[in-house]
Image (cartoon, rainbow, N blue to C red; front, side, top):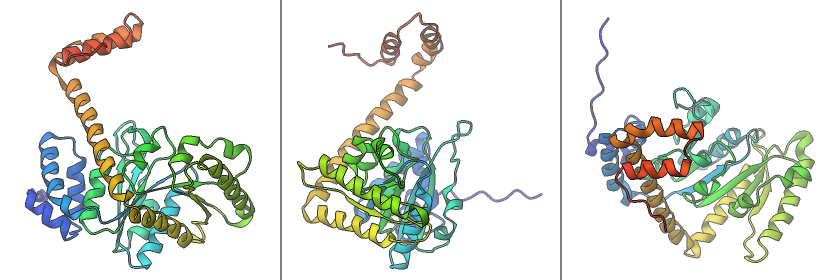
Length: 336
């Protein structure tokens, strides 16, 4: 049996030209390069992304969150099909839960969005969350920039669900959309105030059949709740109902998103918001790289197992163990 030929190694110029021309053979490889944890790949990815930066920033970035079972994938496919039919190019960054064994994606959004993935003007990229808080993959932002450089006018970022760090989604997108299920009373009381303070648009999904009335009731209750929370700022998020399964009111949801985007763009806040996002993301990367450098340090590797055993046995406080690890890496611990 003949050995299949190895794929040609791409250069920085190959990636740059391939992304700008939206070469379907190069684009996935560029995203794989960005997501790689190998040092040489990371350095090349940084060079490619830096060259592509002048071609980014022209898309509408939308973060989409919601509790499990709300129908995020069905909604995104319905929204994506609506946008494609209106002549827009759409990229979906579907952040899947990670397998605890392999670290890979579990759900595989391409299989859950079969109709959208068949569209020439749509691109779906499933990425494992790898345990990142908020269900945002480690390289989601860089992936988004590459999709923008490839000419996708709208980038939809789907997260695993409502986690502890919805701010990570809000801090990399222009508009934050939360999907809710029909419900009233006690069910709405469980929605975190922090989430409601972050969202720009709320869509109550599954507003069809017997759920229609419940969805309308939920929307009105959410509007009242948001009115109380945002009474001081006067900037109340839009609340709409829709049915992704029946493709009903999807255009209304998108109109609310686009109105929000145009509003912050006209006020000048869009440019300021993206600048702030870049700065915050820089420090997140600094935190991540410092942690990786400490973990990989040879001196840390020598004491790691012993310190972990002492913490597990209760003979050493986690704070003390952490200080030993940081000091072993050569960093100075500030105690004041």
